[in-house]
Image 1 (tube, one colour):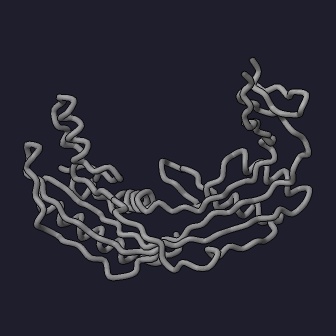
Image 2 (tube, one colour):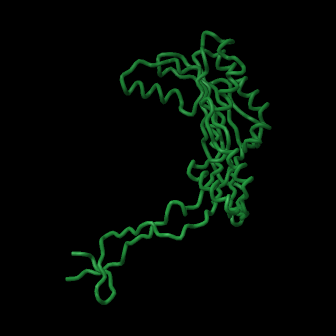
Image 3 (cartoon, rainbow, N blue to C red):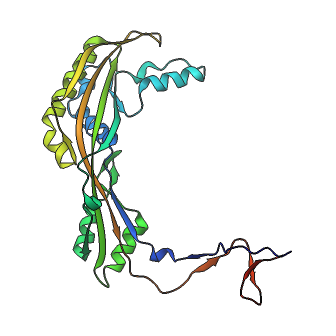
Length: 267
């Protein structure tokens, strides 16, 4: 019996023919963690509160770390306090437009140089820049634009986010002090937030007191700050002139062609 099936052959283009994708993605957790870390260094919190050390600032809640230590049977490491945790709790697209505001334009050599200047890099454990581009993608664009301008397509996106900033310490006065510091810093930094693509929509709200926890062998005091903001982003696809060659053909399963021109699975 002969079994005839459609072909699963795939023509694989050369990687040099792939378009280059550039993403403008602002993660509010990473961004706010970064600027809060810088602020706490500049305000010299450790010098003002030498008995409490540095403030641990991150996107992972200290309670999650303590619970993991409990699962491993390890003693609780209370050095995770005082802490500030940034959590992006919700996202909903806003201001949807026909075609998602998709535009086409040509990239010149100077445009590619500008894109490289906005690329995301990490300096001293702090991220800078807004555009995510791979090393190979950037190199291919820089080489191709020397021959001709490049066609680019870009679509924009904006979404409303609710971001919560949780503060915990084993001293009520320290929790209150950090709460005030963060509130004042965020209000002061609205212009910087806007320039980074994070627009705070409303008054910054929060609760200074009322949260306590006794699950980890200490009395912990918590407070919370909430931001409602619009975050802008987008994606760009850059077409690289194609190299007219087929690198290889993937055939699965292996096939033969019979005298009638039909594909047949090899026996």
